[in-house]
Length: 496
Image (cartoon, helix red, strand yellow):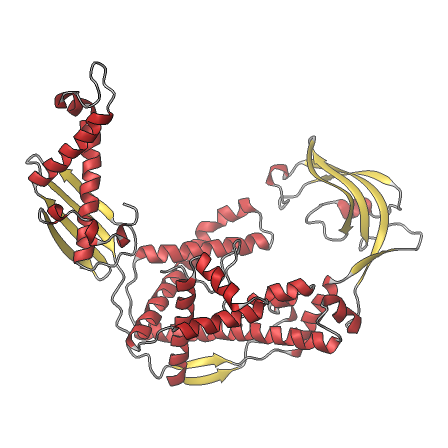
């Protein structure tokens, strides 16, 4: 019954409305049981219509289309007609029930029973999950801890050093010497196991010392000199990135072209100019990166503050949530987790073994997030917090400024991808949070001390002029700018 939740009552035939008896029970605050009875006369009429259609289409030997006797059609097609009739009657009745009783569906109805009775009537039962009616309580004057926006100098330095590292370059080692374990080498390599090619490259530059990708290479190539060739044998470890070769013997055929040194540029004006034509000095680059980090730390603090609000609201508001909404949110969180794991190098086959454990670990978080969204919406409804056209236009302008586009282009993207309502939902929640902050008893706290290795991801993102522009969306605060092939963002919540 596709589209059932949005089907207007006008789709239900007027005659059908007068022949249906609909009762709605409420076994819980988030479930409705719909009991359906349709009288025999209407059922018979609809069944006859289906048989007329079947008669015109049936290919029965000895009879022209439309001329086969009903008794023969009953024998050959009766069961199929009854199945189609039951489905049609159920869909029509559910449309009427949903419209007449203002039922707000969360998911497709679960058909509990459906029967064409001997007296010719049709009786059925369906269970549906509905959005809960949330009456928000005690949301003014919340006691919460808000996180200050503070960028440690060490994190900015880490950011700048990461940019310098990304602009490193290779230069040949002039000294006539053999390969050392910490060198970079330019090689031709053919990597195979049991006659099957695993990896083959010509003139590739490989860092030695870390053999997680090419196990045994460092040990085998150490001591070689440019121009030499060698076959290296190894046994592939359990964590090898291609599971089919784990534990098997493999060999590299290697030709060494050159030994390389990696040169990392100094943090100076020349590096700034190389990174972007917009920068004329290191001071310009430092200011730009400090602004990006400040934006990202502000987003991190905003996430912390939202979490504090959610915790306080959940203490004061008991909300029963539909399981289907929780499952959708859980699926969303699991997909995010899988993406992060794959991005960090966890093999796909290992991920599948971990999914169920991860899913159970995230289930409570998924339920709390659904509750939070419903409570925020209820507060916004009660306080009449609405997103105006001016609010939407302002956000388009902010996103445009952050991505070197016009607000019209941003607006067109959202409309093309049918994401305007999604953006309005994000803005409305932000406005609701700001409303709650205004009345809250706030204790400002310092952000947790970060190890340099835990600096925000923005430290790894900028490498050239184009990347400076492209990364602006990530630091705008909501990851809202639509992109055809974007991955799920942590701030998005598919609960609607």
